[in-house]
Length: 133
Image 1 (cartoon, rainbow, N blue to C red):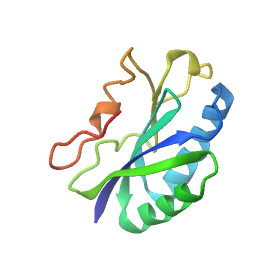
Image 2 (cartoon, one colour):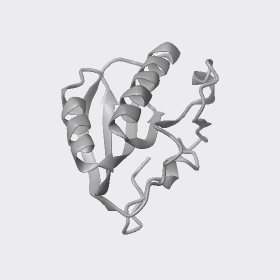
Image 3 (cartoon, rainbow, N blue to C red):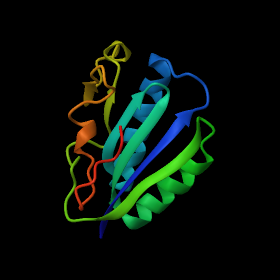
């Protein structure tokens, strides 16, 4: 069974280019091992993440996120079963400010002035409700 989990959290300390690059590389490696796919939006000190995969893998990742000292005010937005993955091509797509892509990361999508990208809008529940970005 596949599920999609969406949440928001606030950064504990400001993230720079290198911090985000390291976080993204670590997440991509871990997600590939766990057969997870998804998208991470970082804007205005807030992370909004959508993760898709097997229930057991999501349980493990969620438990780790709740203990991660880089985040606080973690709030679950949605968790529901899905029929298909919206992010099947990315172990972790990433949207943020254009200037944070100094390392030309694959799967990077710049955000607009409203703090969103087309990829960040792809995280929708089966009922058609979009996760806030």
